[in-house]
Image (cartoon, rainbow, N blue to C red):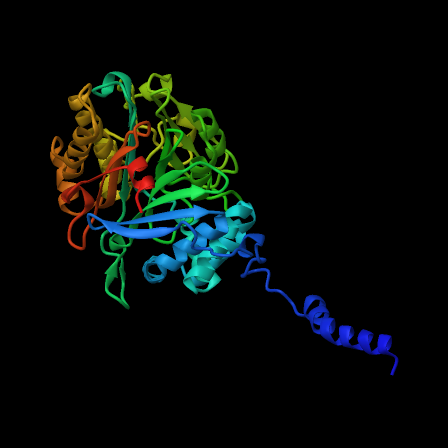
Length: 445
């Protein structure tokens, strides 16, 4: 046989299976993403580490988005799966099934930036968990249109040295449990440090399994956090707030950068806080799918009765103050007084309770005004959550109305932050405080 013909036959036999697979084997586009180029690397664990310090999990992620996702999945694969079971069991109880969550993911996935899809794929490969589990964990922000969390930015005359302080309370029930292992959701938290190949270094305070962020700050001194709200003006066609806050950590160099990122491609109802450690200022953002308000402490909106401003402080619980946005969530602007109490008692209207939270928060900020530092802020917030200056809110809290699983306050300029976590039996505000410095953590291993 001609040697050239023989060589051609051999080459054909070698490449034919690859051609057949490429052209005739279907790809399930609804679940598994295309393989990222970042996957072609020598060591996906390069530079990543995980440790426990003062009983707190600290995770350091390094490299490309794929590498950071792989490191996350590799080091915390058991905890990610436990959190997945916690979430799916909880949402099943409130009427949101696995199929519903996957529907939400498929509705929103095209708005997730490709670098975070790469990161999710890295987490899938590092943890050896199904893609659907990773997708659902990162779908949760799209369905948390609830009354959760509180936050504040304080600076200037409100703090001891004029530096900006950023506070957030992550409010959620302490009774969500993985029935298979007995692990409670509040046990599945970590401080996540990121050193991305493209972007700024950052720290976020996370439930384990989140590629997005629920709050933190970056090396440029930009801090961000959120509170969820109810509204009729929502869409699944936007980008969830967790991914937008992740983008702030990765790419925002100034407050204006952060505001621009947060206000693009909106989805649900959120109160957001941005603090700038370089200019020592803060703003509050109220947003829904079609409406946005960005305000400083002395914006006239902050004085709309019954609400009132506090110098050099913006704060929120779980309702809107700007009238147009408020109209998307309630047909009554005023949420204090006997009418609000009547609606609360007989119409299951939650805003009278939220007014009590706002009032308690505001009273204690005014009491500590000018004396706020990291320690004083955490002491003040503890008093807020036990209802120290408001007997009615104290009664609500005694009934377990608003539980918190994580609270933190940071100086985004110096990198100092205090944080506390809920335990199996106690909310975060009842537990001990952990002290860290962002830059010290970055240099440790």
